[in-house]
Length: 178
Image (cartoon, rainbow, N blue to C red):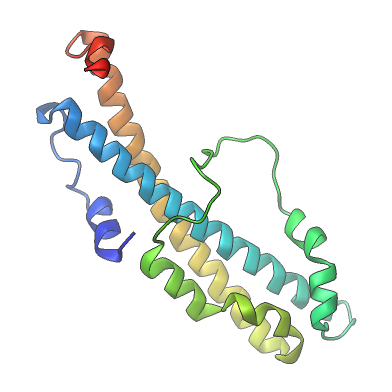
């Protein structure tokens, strides 16, 4: 999703007067928000994974084990990436685990912080550089999460309007079949 599209969806007045919109327009908006959420979720998962790997390398060094070799990092990936996996919760399941067609500027920004191919070279940077990466990745993950939370709120508002219309009889299930 292009940065301009995401900013448009996040604008405070984008939803406007939902009651004045057609059901087709509301459904189209909901789909647009779902696609944006897929992109944000994907980038967030990428940021969290990189953060976990960098933080694990920093923790290893704080324990006095010294810098890792690339093979060490790769060998410990299941343990590192499985560490923060949560059980069933209140999150939303993505509609797809495939990378979205376009993650736009968000993916570019993440690559600018830490390119995925640089992860195996973490053993070659200083502790201060690792701390800086942890800070930057943490801040970036928070930014993406905040945007994602706003998208969820907008999806909830659109869904509530659709449900309201079904409950009041303004639209019917039969209208879906047309």
